[in-house]
Length: 287
Image (cartoon, rainbow, N blue to C red; front, top):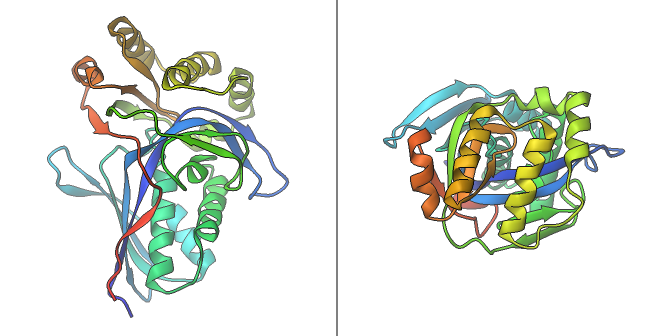
């Protein structure tokens, strides 16, 4: 048996979204637009008789530290797959801050488990399991679908089989500052929140990165999800000619272009990443 397998999945920032209630979990999800980013989650899985999960995050200096021992999300999906393993996930970006890390953790972990135990699942089956877990636990709606590949994405159908357009038109870096987390299940589970989100959803498709940020900003304002911190900083970005919007669903801001870093620097630690060229993939698979 293999000693371990390591997989990586990029994260995803939603600019705007709309919940779609399907007849099944597979057809329930969201439509909207976002960016798949080069930062995400690395999952290392090892054979074990009992399941254990350790969630780690790297400090600003690069040293990993434990955020949580245990994860109902990952533990439930392993139970459904009828496997046990020791799982360690690691990320740089803050958890619960609108970077799609729950979807990335699911996809990376399931992909690694699939290789570790030679389960024979294809990428579609892996995504189906991850999407079902996200919807069931209300930790996300469209991140799994987006993270199946890279690019600036526009999702016109819910679930992993929905129509997705991917564009690679953002060559410069993206930067982000997080002011804290937003409890995603509270928002996704609230009919009042979802009604406002639905009403704010734009009726046009972004043809350019400028369109994407314009529509995302309008959605953040009209949906009522935007926080004071994000509103204040986006206005400063506007004055500097920097494209920016809110990280959905998180109390944070992301902005495009090299000039953005200097504008965001006074407001906290600035994370840098790029548009991801790919989706989830194996990093280490010893023979």
